[in-house]
Length: 485
Ligand code: NAD
Image (cartoon, rainbow, N blue to C red; front, side, top):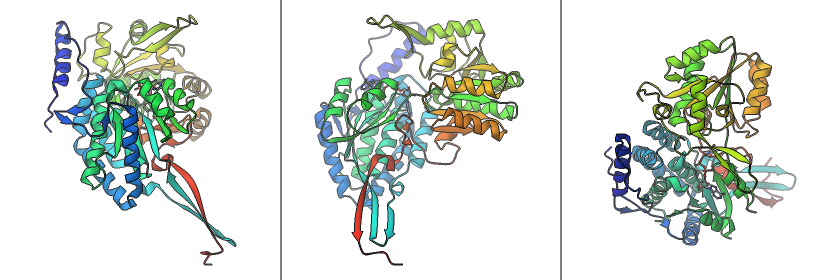
C-alpha cells in the first residue's frame, strides 16, 4: 500500500536520516494531529469540553442503534483497521520512533480479528416461584479513555470496538507523543461509523492532550467511567479521580525456564516474544530466571535466534544509558527512569550506544547474564534487552521471579513440562496473564486461544478487558410470570 506523508512527517524522516549522517538536526515540527495528507481528521477538537460534548452526542446515537446496527459499524471498523494497518504501523513508528512496522501491522490485524463485539454482552436470567429476574449488561454512558504511546492506534481501536459494542460513547485523551497516530485511529472509527450509517462523529479526541485536558475529563459530569492504559503515574491519577475507573497499568513480566523444558523451543519463544515490536507490549518477557543446569544451552539457543550477548561490563555501561537518574528536589531521593530515547528502539540502535556496530537484520534482541539486583531485572525497560539470572532450583526461581514482578499482578511466563512447578509459580505470582511454553503474545490471543485486548486491567481486576468490562449490571424483575416449568 502506498503511504503518502504530510510535510511534518517527511521532515521528521529527513531529520532522522540527517542525524544518522551526522548532520545538524533541523528544528522538529510538532506532529499535526488534526489532519492526514491534507484530509481533516473527524472527531478531533481543540477543547476537551467540546470533545466530551461530541462524544455525548455519539453516545446518544449508539443508544438509539439496534445491536445489529452497532455490529455493522464494528464490522466496518474491523475492515478499515485491517486495510489501514500498514499506514497506522508506519505512522506509529515514525511519530514515536518506537517499535517495528511489521509487528505493529500484525498488532492492528489482531485487534481487527480478535477484539470481541456485541456477542460479548450477555444477559443472565433467574426464574423461580416469584417469576423472572433479568440481569443485563448496560452501558455506562460516555467513557473517558487515556491511551499509551506504546500501542497507540491499537488501543484506540480496541477500546472503541469494546466500548461501542457495550453501547457507550468514548472520548480519548491520547498520549501526547503518539497523538497523530492515535487521532488517525479516532478518525478511522468515525469514517467507519459514517460508512455503516452511524453518526459522523461517534468517538472524539483532542488535538493537544495534556494533564489539564485529562483533568477536565476526570471532573466532567458526562463522563461516567474512566479507562486508563498506561504507566503507574497515570493509573494512580485515574484511580484517585473519584470516578469509577478501570486501570491497566505497568508490568515487569518474569520468565522461568526449568530443566524439564524443551530448551531449544523455550529459547526461540522467549526471543520471539521479547523482541516483538521491540518489547513495547506490557506483556513481553522482561527478565529470565534459568535453572543453572540448562542456562548455557538456553543462552546458546537464544543466540541462534537473533540474540546478541553482551558482557557484564557492557551491560553496566548500557544500563547507565537506558536508565536515567532523576533527583526529586523536595525529598532528595534519586530515582532511575527509562530513557525515552531508548524505549522501543531496535537492538542495533541500543548496541551502537555502547560502541557495538551490528546489522539490524542480524540481531533483534540483546541478552546478558546479570544478578537479581541489576537494574535490567528491576526496571520495566520496554526495549529489546533481556537479562538472564541463573537459579539453583524452583524455590529460588519462584522467589526471585515473584519479587521481580513487583506485585503488578500483570503477566508471567514459564517454560516447563513439570505441572507441579507450573502450578506453583502460577499460584505464587498471581498475575492476570500466565503463559506456559509459548511466546508472551500467545497471552493476548496471538498464537494462543482467547480474545485480544491492549488494555489489561490488573490493578482493578477486569483482566483482559472486552465489551462487558465497560458495562454496569442492571436488574429487571417480572413478578409472577414467565416461569414456564
Ligand atoms: P505513560 O504512563 O507515559 O502515559 C499514558 C498516558 O497517560 C498518556 O496519555 C500520558 O500523557 C498520560 N499521563 C501520564 N501521567 C498522567 C497523569 N498524572 N495524569 C493524567 N494523564 C497522565 O504510558 P506509556 O509510556 O505510553 O506506556 C507505557 C506504560 O504503560 C508501561 O508502564 C506499560 O506497561 C503500560 N501499559 C500497560 C498496558 C496494560 O494493558 N496493562 C498496556 C500498554 C501499556
